[in-house]
Structure formats: structure tokens, C-alpha cells
Length: 423
Image 1 (cartoon, one colour):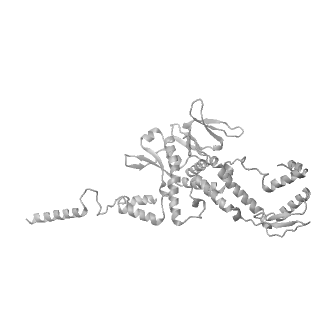
Image 2 (spheres, helix red, strand yellow):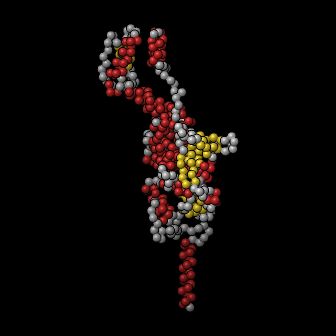
Image 3 (cartoon, one colour):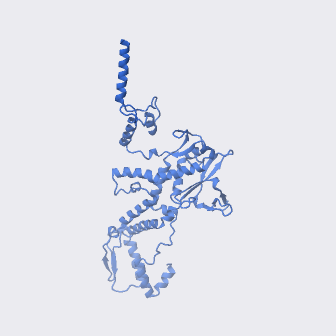
């Protein structure tokens, strides 16, 4: 309500009394349904920012690799395609591969889509990937051609509007119901984010006003509007902040103060805020301990939750990027020749040093890891004669002669040879 509306009410005592009852009950405030939770406002909620940061930084920390299939079983590491150069090293003149991946994940986890302009060389090869500002890009299906069109509006004086077809962009949609455009988590989680922001706003107001409405003032007579406004300004100026908490109040003209007994525990503010953080983590499928909520965390369950995070949260994102990159950035000839891109998730699946050492020892002992295989997983250089695979002497393939039988057969052959020479 504006100032003129309040003045108009003040001239009518009945209306003024009703307005004061509404004001004390909070009914004069907006209910929040008309508040638009946009990207900027959503990212100011710490849980949303924390989840998006975990997903973006984790994804950007994992390198993309290029491989070429040699046959049905074997492959080799290669460095041949332009797509690998752009996603692994330098996507454009202004960004590193890390920052491109990080930005892409931020856009996917807020707006649901990541789109970059693909610039090509004269021979058709890839030259650069230049990401769009998604607030200035619309994705729609053309009524004329029936294909997907990406319309870019710079939204600035002199800016030129342009349209791009599917082959001119690199588009990664997030979770989608139509397979073309991703769903915006911010839009679908508007109510949960709005509720979380309201808790934070309440907390700010709560502490700003001395942590709680400390009590009620009673007066034997009805105060005139002028006296009421003077009293309210005086209380707000001298007693209305956290710094003034505990300061004695000077009452006048029969004014009586009745204290309230209210605290944050009674209001369940802390419990509500924790639940709302859990709700946001549920939307992004991020473990609570990764946004610094350690209420139910232990050393054992954190390790398992981290592995579950890699398998059930990050793996779908890696597969989403891999499938889009292989389909859109590699040519049909390159795919037929056996080239493909894959993110190396080995770093995310590592446990503690003791568990890793035990796993490597078992792999080496049972013959499915060589010394160089282990050194490669640890980012160490190869060594000479390090590609030898061991085989336990007491283990043989099913259906073959056992080690004891082989030793007896060899002994018999040596004995027979010795006997034959004696003759």
C-alpha cells in the first residue's frame, strides 16, 4: 500500500483500526505468488548455488578422452579430431576447456540447455565453440522447414538478430520430456526455491529486529495516529536492532510492556531451513554432505555416498555430454573409422589410499592389471618390462591339466630322458 492509501485510511478511525490489525497479522503483505523466481534470485539461495557449483566443478574436473576402436575388444588412445582439441584443450580464444564445461553445467542446471555456436574451417573441420547467453536465445521448431531453429537476440541497440539451424550449433539438452529441449530445474522447483528464500528473508528480519518480537505494548487509551507513529519511530530507532537487544525501554503515559517468550527453536526456523536444503539437494541429486550439511554424516557413509554421487548423479551427465559430442561434433566418417569421445571417470571412483592399494594389489596378483596399467591409473610414466601380467601357479583355465599334474608330467618326462641315456 502506498503512502496516499495509508493517509486515506488514517482519516477514518475504523479503517485505521482494521489496517493495524491486518498489519500486525501480516495480511497487508503480498503472499509471494506474484514473485518471479528468476535465475539471479534462485542463485542467491545458498542451497541452489551450492548444488550447481558441486555439479559444475566436478564435471569440469574430469577430462574428455579420444579413442579409436581397433577391433571388437581393443582400442587405442588418439589425439586426431578437432572435437577432442576443442573439448579437451582450447574451445575458443577466450576460454579454457575447464571453463567451457563449467559454464555448460551451470546453464544446464539452471535453464536446462547449453548451446554453443560451432565455427568451422574452410575444409569443414571445427574451429571453435562459442557458448551463447541462454537468456538471449530461444529454441523453437520452424513452421516452414519443420527443423529446430535457434534464434539469438542480442537485446542491445544495434544488435543483429540471427537464426541458426541444428548443424550450426552444439546443443546439449538437460533432462527432457521431448528429447529436444531440456527442462529448467529453476522453473520446476520454483516453489521449493521460493520457500527457501522466504526462510532466509525471515531470518534476516528476525535478527534485524532484535532476534524476536520481544513483547507487546499496552496503553489504557487508544493512541492517536500521530502518537502511534511517534512511538513506533522511537522504538524502531532505539530498540529495533540486534545491537540494541537488552537495552532498557523507557515507557511513558501509562504505557505497559508485556514480554513474549519466543525463540528460533519454537518457530522451528532452523529445522525448516535444513529440510529446504534437503529438498533442493533432492532436486539436483546431490548428497547433503557435499553442500556442507553433515548432520547424519560418518566416514563410512560419506565414502559410499560419494561413490553413489559419481554413479547415479555424474554418470548420466557424462553420458549426456558424450552422446551429444559424438553425434554433433564428430563427422560420420570419423565415427565409421572408430573414433569416439569418452570422459575418464576413474578419478571420481577412487577411494582412499588404503582401498586403492588393496584393489591394485588384487588386480596385480590375479593377473588383470600390469605394473604399467597401475602406473597409468596413477598418472605415472611407464617403466621397462612393466606390461607383464602375472598368473598364480595354482590357477589354470577350466578343463586344463592342473599345476600338480603338469609338474608330475614334466618330472616323468625328465626321468624317462635320463633313463634313455643310461641305456
